[in-house]
Length: 462
Image (cartoon, rainbow, N blue to C red):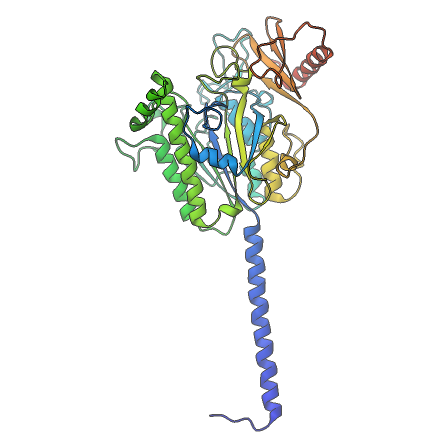
């Protein structure tokens, strides 16, 4: 055994070892700081549901069994008055992606034409025959493209319906894509899901078999993405469901349950579809917890427009000529931001889906979104229990006589091509049964003027 010749040598060795230990500690501390910096930015999961009515959920209608979504609401901030600027498939997607009112992008209806052959499509029953663009222009900036600037990895699963094939999600900021097709809806929720020409990339042919249910196939892919994610970068998972869009084909083992509740025919099928949606939400949340990242993951759950069935107590819906009614334009929105949103809280501040774009960017960057080409505003103040400046919300779609509306606080004005107007206090009259047009209210003329001015600025002329 080596012996030191004197105490000076021993002291010198002690200093060297102390310095080495200090350096090691510093390195470890630096590594910890780096890891904290990497993990500080939260992951984001956006669950975007198709044709899911505001009241098609257990906490608003006991006909539906949605324990997972009900639980999410208890742990989140729920928006009682969330709206879609153009409540229909393609425009709703364009708006949530870009933070812009879809009409400003010339998208006033769902895409019904082939973008490879024609730029615009027309709707036979549209009284003004307004053209609607058949794709989301690549020059439009998406939240995925902006998130990449802040180090996010973007995954996309499900329904795109924004044109094909030139501007698939992979060309607009998404790093990986699954189940995007040329179709606005499947032909069947049991395999085979799509016509061959609707799924040219074969997303939903490989690894699936007869008897597989579409929503569950997509959910399995989403949970596998979460389970296997191994990058240091934070991620945003955009899971855009095909469900509960028609055809209404529920999971077979669930249909009798809803028939027993008094739901008949396709409505019972719809009830079963909503339950599978609820199971999906539960499985995604479970995957986040098992991965150990639930406390650092924001969940946003929203629908793209009102439902095709009863939207009571709201009036209107996807069909019937009153899509700008509360039943068509008002949607479920709940946000769980761990450590920020207070569990089990609600707000009745009117907001729109375009507000998610600047909210997501503020979350990712830690700074207020300065993108001056958008119409959305950040919801961060509301998420923190505060409020936002009062504003007016505008709506536009071109299918029938009813085509535009504006919301200002409690008040809503609806406009028709034929010259008709309607005025409702949607707080006191949620079902829009008491039309107050022509009763001498000052707000009537104010909203008429503001809506006309907005149309002149926002609606393209041809």
